[in-house]
Image 1 (tube, rainbow, N blue to C red):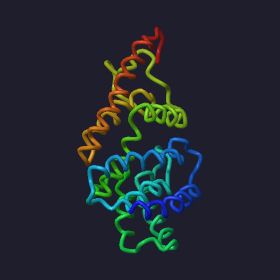
Image 2 (image 1 turned 60 degrees about the vertical axis):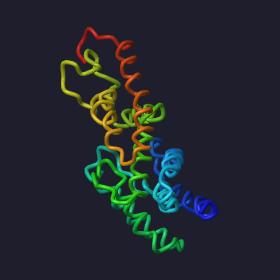
Image 3 (image 1 turned 180 degrees about the vertical axis):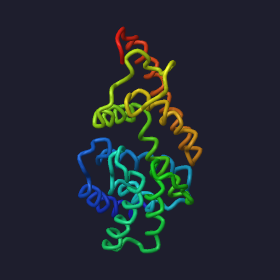
Length: 219
């Protein structure tokens, strides 16, 4: 299997690179990290098909729409269809195409589709883990800047006396979405890793608020 993975990885990388846009939160380094996360999870799931996982990790963002795009929830389905067409042209094992497509289709938080195979569960966990930890924190603020969000609410950064709004304030995203990810992990190994990385975000949030203070004027 290791030889097979080594043979396919550069071909998958070439497909992924050709389809990348200008979003540095979803660049080739993100794909490498997702695969590395998946490799950790595969160690606990010897029954999973590593080639299916590899292909889905590298091709899951072939169609990557902005978070505020009205068809964002359809992007993973479009990516799955495109990936299967391109893999078929490369003579990827035909009996694995459906599994790759399912893993890509169900990886997305926006699509909200349940993964029914261990391969899809691993890919979903591996991708979401990259939203946590120090790298996840950097990706959070990078994406917030692209969406013209403020760093935090000026007078109430921890939302103690207001509704959370992660479209307006980047810091709110830690609570509105990211701190829920460990509980949504599909695998025990993914959950353990996600919990460790979430601690980085929660510690940062507390430190940020302490340094931020409370502005005297409006937010």
